[in-house]
Image (tube, rainbow, N blue to C red; front, side):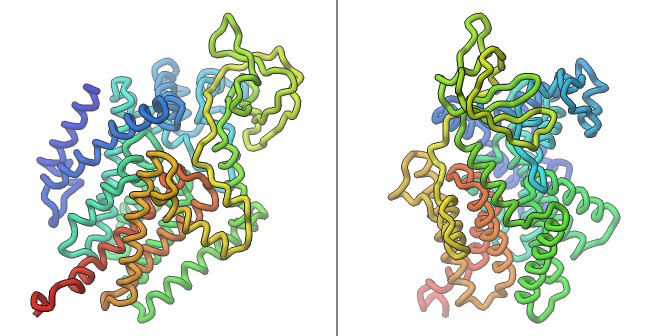
Length: 503
């Protein structure tokens, strides 16, 4: 924690005294406010660590811990085999079974190639691992330093989002940044070594560079920034970032061109772009976007079941979470044999895309190393299995991403926390809809914010039917529901002013 504290103080004072070399320069917000807000945001680092320690026994077997171990292992390769490390950093490594890189790195890790199939876009773990292998040179072998840098990257991204939108919130700048930085789930999950911190950084870069390109200047640097962010969006959480790119590119362009019917222009262009994307996907892999989302749902549902995960030089194996299916070697802790007639799924390293099944094991002599164990999640949702048409899927999607759980049906402490967040979202959605009906302010920005947030909610609900995953994955999008409510907050305040005060 000492290294974490020193880095936190260093970043705090750099923001406070020179706006981190001018990166956080803003005429509406003083550097003291920005540094204080970053300090509050960075408290998420110990908060999520303590949360996982209390409820799950630690982060070690979850994404944060696995990413940390894999990044540290890649950093070890930099010291021992620098040429192989440089190849890996530039994507020139040889991943094939039996290769030097496979033996020295892949066989010792979980998330570089973790046995999941690749569907159209690959939600790439390697971006996170490569970045944090570089951070490890400065981290003093501390998980907390890694998480702090992830938090700082997300703060940069959130500040860029704020800079792109603050023109619609005159006099409300500090509230806009507060919402972005302290929305509970977004605050929490960007304080860990997860994809969320980097994804928010990329999303902020997309929005800011698009805004600069459309409204400020069309310099080569800005164009390059847009292209770099778009490329990263293809690799990292494309379900969030590609949709964000489409929505906000259309938003800024239509605002600039200022057609009379902005809403009609936006809806028509958004529909056309999604249809073109679907057509392109059908041509490329002969599947629709809906079918791809369905495949993603199957993969996620299987992963959410947990299990015992074993690995050897040839394959990655998943058994049910049942210790009676395996036998641990007495003289070699952490190594197991699979019992006769046990069923399992497996992925061969030479073709990770193919999921294979063994219904009755006959090989009781092979020895496998334990990768990790994970119990089945208690927050899996069954609604996705009962498909009753488009209307039902839309209703279920919005209900389970915005209104479930809601105190009365919360089954755990975590779900009570999610209930509080859902109450915030429902209240903000009500204010937004009230403003759309009764306010005289231009409705176009709020329509875009809600299209982005609700569209993302539907996609996440369909592909990730698990309460914990929904709360985490939706956070960068649903924050725009609160931003929509902020947009109309002044009108709502004036509505409830006493008559004498408004004269």
